[in-house]
Structures are given as structure tokens and as C-alpha cells.
Length: 199
Image (cartoon, one colour):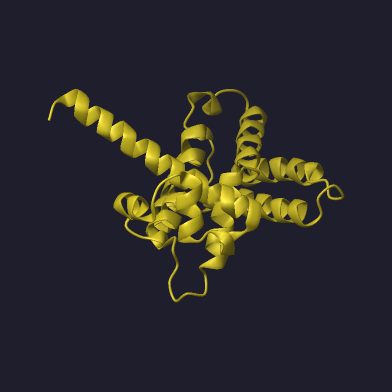
């Protein structure tokens, strides 16, 4: 098999995987986690369930990939060197704004629903991602807020503070669409992050 043919096969495989991931995210966004059956996933992706299994192996593996995809998207966004430039206030602003944008995405909402829906099944579907995620977020915080004298624990607390508060604001916005304004809370969060990282 020639290199061009291998490259074509790899591109085709990646496109199929991306269609399946998009299908899962779309179904969960529109109808909730319970609606993401194997039949609906395959139909929406425009492939057979056998093809889905060929690329992922199982439905659990697809759900894991949605979580991984959400994590990668966030990391890749904040890997931009621009996030490490500017004053402390500017960097905190960029960091919290980018995080809030990600948390409002369909991808993040789908990941949250997956985590909630699978929490009582005797396993945590995100276990393989959890420890790596903590280390990645700590490294990201250290890179963006490079001159902070905060300990690793304090940086981790700042990261978790962003995660917990934005998740709460997101859920409240979802439960009270049109009547809840999260803007003041995101503003409070910026000040809190700055206080935690630069005590």
C-alpha cells in the first residue's frame, strides 16, 4: 500500500471518528444522554453500528472519547502563547473568558451529562483522564501565571475554583434560561483567581 493511500485511509478514518463524536454531542445536546443509543449515534453519523465499533470498540469508548475531546479542546485553546502575555489582570481575564467560552460549548455540556449519567455504574468513566487532567491544568496554570509565587496546591485550588464556579454558573444558566445572568459571577471569579494566585 502506498503512502498516499495510507494517508487517504487515515483521513477517512479520522473523518468517521469525528462524525461519530459530533453525533454523540448533538444527540446529547438536543435530547439528553438517555437518547444517545447506539442506533441513533450510527444513524446520525451516517454509518453502521459495525463501523462505529470498528473505530471505537464500544459505546463506553465513544463516551470516553467525548470526554478526552473536550479536555483536548480546552488544552489546545489555552496552549496559545498569547495567554502568557500581558499584565496579571489581562491574563486572568483571558484565562477565565476562554474557560467560560469552553464551558458554554455543546461539547462541554455533553461531557458533563456523560459524567453525571455514568457516575452510579460502579466505575468512573473518566478515571483514565482524571489524573492526567489535573497535571495538565496545573502545568497550564503555571505557564500562564509564570511569575506567581503560589504553591502547586494554591494553583490547583485556583483551577478548581474556575471549574466549580463556571460549572455552577453554566447549570444555573441552563436551568433558568433568560432569567439568570452569570456575568457578575464570572467577574467575581476573575478577582478571586487573581487573589488566589497572587496573595
